[in-house]
Image (cartoon, rainbow over all chains, first blue to last red; front, side):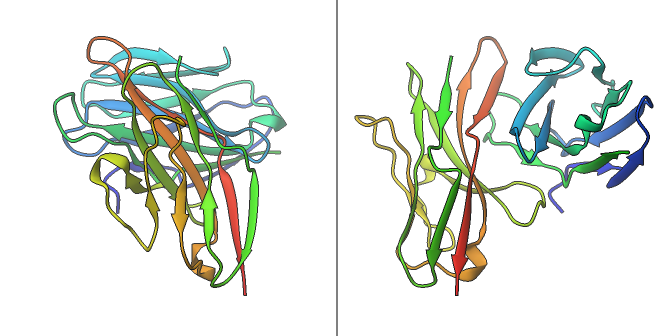
Length: 114
Length: 112
């Protein structure tokens, strides 16, 4: 167990639907990062939150949104789903500056859009 | 902007052969570099960080600032080394913000 918890592990849904992926960071970590991993695009950075605030945005579609709550868990919302959104979605967390750094990844949520 | 390049998408070697996974970075400052490994679409796991100068599972990686490279090497590949390997560069991007930038990954297959 890496300390980063992602739920659900698997999700199958239909096109046009909306889903929410959840991530609980490792204890003490303030930053949460979301990545999308697909066969053709590799590992794509989506968005980063630090202590509740959005800090960086990557290749995140407008149909996608995220937030980080006061307890530091984060949710990634995917709406108007398309077949191409099928991918593994990883969450990672990292400690505050000044502490030994490095990302710790969760086990991912495998999203299948049918 | 920092960029990490892994020129080989696929790499196939035989068991017992040496293996080198290439990684080049572009960053104007002093980068911190990592190698992550992902087995069979599981979560990414930290394999090496250059600052530690360690050897994990027989793998080593040396930072070459002149060539801006951080290649991952192992003298004798094992079948269980078959996995996806990602090189990553870490840098501060202002204030309390820092980010890890990943290369596109190299899929290593070690054949019996």
